[in-house]
Length: 111
Image (cartoon, rainbow, N blue to C red; front, side, top):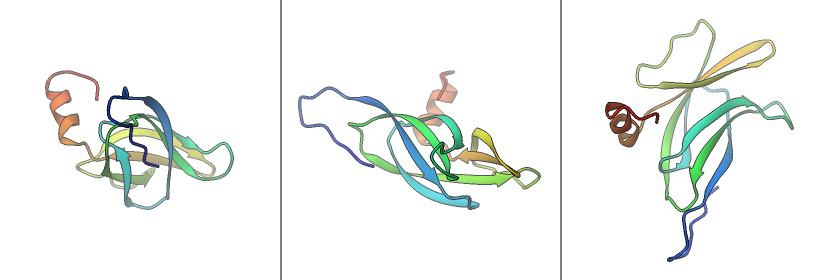
């Protein structure tokens, strides 16, 4: 899901949905600066999804996403972005921070 604006157009903030497989680790393409705002089951099916606030004018970058079940080891480098019940399981989703996330954290901003 990639969109870019023509020169001179304003950036567009949107909420995008990203389906993520229930796998230990995967790479998904998200616009730079995307901020995960919700993790849950897709209402239309049984897919695990995350929703993110994105600026659709930004280029996409690879983001490493981790999915863990309750009681499983959590990734050292991941930041917890949400958990959801998908009966009979509870999935916990982590995303590896970008350099921008780390700088915002150091400055005291919510990334």
